Length: 615
Image 1 (cartoon, rainbow, N blue to C red):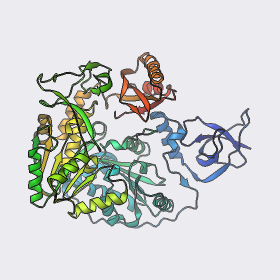
Image 2 (cartoon, one colour; image 1 turned 180 degrees about the horizontal axis):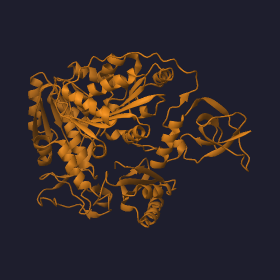
Image 3 (spheres, rainbow, N blue to C red; image 1 turned 90 degrees about the vertical axis):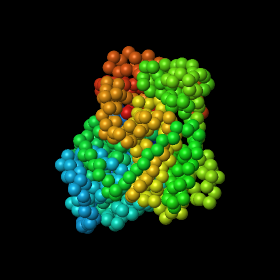
Image 4 (tube, rainbow, N blue to C red; image 1 turned 60 degrees about the vertical axis):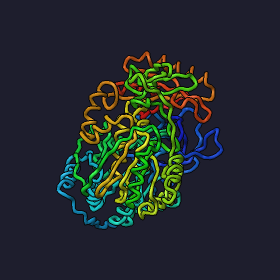
């Protein structure tokens, strides 16, 4: 009889010991029974052990799948860094299939792409550095560099992954990749059907599929000879998982590339401050088409001011298309001064405070500072702090009333629920069957339509005034991305509704995003990432008093640790969610080991840990 320790997939449990008559290998996927569960559980063999002193249950079945050594090593890192069990970390991977070695036919690919002088320099830089940041302006042709690099890797018989935010996986990108790589490429994201995913996996197992373009989960597919990872729109926060394990696919890509000496390209027009600080970069500024962009500002507090309506009307009169952007789907809500556009900042943290209506107070989620809701603005002393709310559905309705003869469509996650709907709306927009597209962040990614001559940006102040050290970076990055959708070829206009014209105007017209990043690094030094590590511990329970006591207990314990700082604690921004009351502790430290050790000691069933939190 053999004895093995196994990790139960998707379970927070520690390793359990089972027996088996078969000789099993480390990484084999098996089925085991657990005392309290009716159904058998998926598990992975972690190590062979001596016969224990207690009686063991026999492994029920050995499945024809296995996790290789690299998968177990990466999962071990995920479990340690993102504070979860090995079973939870391994559950993000798709295992290999036990089968005869596939006979791969090496097809030769020729994209016929001729790079410009600037693109060629960027291409060589990424090749020489092995892991590089392609800091490329919107429309400068980074996709051509991606395709050339993928072509080179695939022609060597190796595999490649192109990661994109899910909302960037457009039919347009799919067509470009399929044109070059034919049936060797497949698209992978949450809207792909289970049947199609099984077909893709079969193609990976038998060697027919050599390239995957996909959302963050594509990073964990079973490629035998992965040599290249490209992370497009690397600044995008959707690379961070919001469920356990709360990994960041961009950061993991960098870890994997360095550990296994792979090629890595991080690409963005608005590089994240962490990548800009840590990774060697090449700045690609020259755009493919000659473009001329005019940027206008509107300080009206109306959602659709006369100035904005006039711009939309003129654009439509010239048979051109318009995109209208709002920060979040359904609606957004924020507190802002109607005169100067400032939000109320915490005197200790340089971040905006959050409204807690029940307490009639503004609170800082970093240090816990609380104050009464002011009657007048503390910045200009004469404006009134307003609580504003507006949504995509409302804007869509208003535009339909204003332009009844035009086709207005909504483009957000509430409206676009399937892959077919995504393709249908984008095809209609591309074929000029839609005049105005109203949407959220989905609008800012991967769309390249030459007839969009006006981008209207509403509510950007709500992003700028968020209760986060990242608020300036998020707001400016988002505005640059949206502005990049207008006038991809020829002239384009952007109209930005903001009370903070000075900030946006400076970085859009007089300076550029690289200057902003350098200034932001100075502001963050010693306080925020990338100089220190930050984590959030979220406590949730249906009993509000019980969960507050639990948070208080850990605040007391964590404050005793001299190597970490309890920056703030208290109610979460969304205090009640799914009938559970939520409290949080925000931690920071320049000692990563001390921070991780402290986080691993939190064993409360009410707690969820978010390392490198996005807030």
